[in-house]
Image (cartoon, rainbow, N blue to C red; front, top):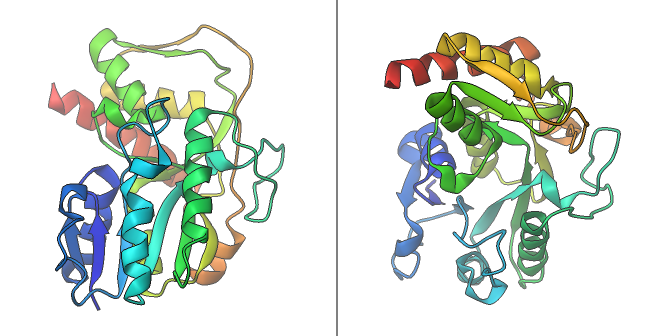
Length: 266
């Protein structure tokens, strides 16, 4: 079986590495190659359009639905990497059947993509809604919690929050995320699957673990209000992949390791 992973960025490269010899890794620029789908049983669309989450983005110019139509025509399964940001805010763990209601432009764009994909006739579609997947990356174009944290810590020796450090969010190390996406791509289940740790991690605690690994720095709180807290209900994920488990100790150890890598990078 060959899995085509489209996107050579942070997520795509890690997923392809987890798949090993089963993967065919390609860039989005190669998506127009008519030979790209030869021998492929599943496509994982990783990465995103650079304008996504900005007023410049347009569904008509996003390559994901276009490529998904090609997959549908050939009877090839399609795995889309979405986001938890399509959900409406909730004080309890977010389930796949919970109400949708994106709070920002990025979430609204990702929901528009989900809806466009779901309308493609004959597409064997699996929609993964990802938590905060983190690892060592310095490319600010991804604009994730951890990329911003690592960048400001390296440049200024500080981590600044405009939110309470007690705010809890669902974080998942890239190693686990990539392995679980790879496993789902081998046997795509269809439908919607939350992909996260299911662990409520206080963001301040993770930041302090990164600072500890880095060996210096401080955490500065500019606004103590709690907002954008979330945890994913990962019951369906664990039913599909019993090995898809990670605890708070593993998440914190991964954060500490990022600080160590940042210090070593100079």
